[in-house]
Length: 309
Image 1 (cartoon, rainbow, N blue to C red):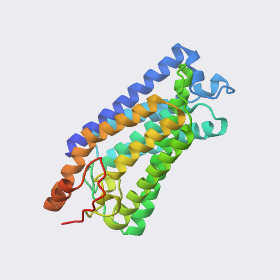
Image 2 (spheres, rainbow, N blue to C red):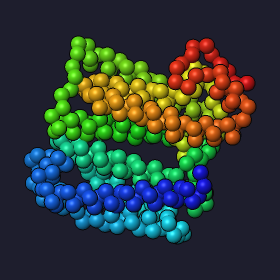
Image 3 (cartoon, one colour):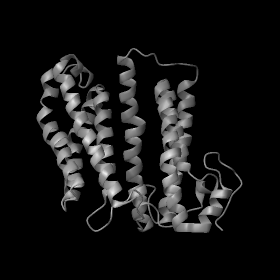
């Protein structure tokens, strides 16, 4: 992915973010009844309206400034994207704290978490002034540091995708009047699947961090090819376990949309993310990765172990 491609992706995202935020506020001003969808019931409507000025400065003006910096390739573009991203964390954390405290307004917490996650993704693929932007960046680090970074990544990703976003979707379903499904042993079955999948995710992350001298995150990916642990049985255990975790959470909440969303994430990974990752691995590891690719399945585990060639 070239420098120009990455800059256009970042500029495109922040343009959409600015326009989306403008449209969201226009909706609230035109139809104030929508306000109750995004804050706890006991709060007066003025609380949410008070966030207009911060959103205007951070999410609208900040995003547009970032777009300008990217398109014009200004030397301060790194500062622009990281400043907007970090500033956006404050209202995100506020919304999460409000939802945890009141048990309500998960829709707002989910939207803000998704926005912050996307901004952070844009900031990380942009890189630094000393390093060209890249969607996949090899970052060699000692195993101890890689393990701590991987643990932090897991905490952030699981908190967003297995807790905040599902709670927001579940609240939206209730507001729309959609019924959750229920069946015998649902909780026990869903939690069992969640625990098994989570163990697989932790095992995969530990293996990459301890043996690969890097993390599972593409922008800090492992420097060495890892064919050990769960990678002996399936090529992409973190993608597989991530989809299964999403299905388990949807199953636990009785939500067909959440289960469908997990499946859609699997399709997106398979058709968009996977080709980029595999191209990078073939370029870096050549015949070793090609042989591994032929021997080990992509989605379906094989319990016949395959070691590196």
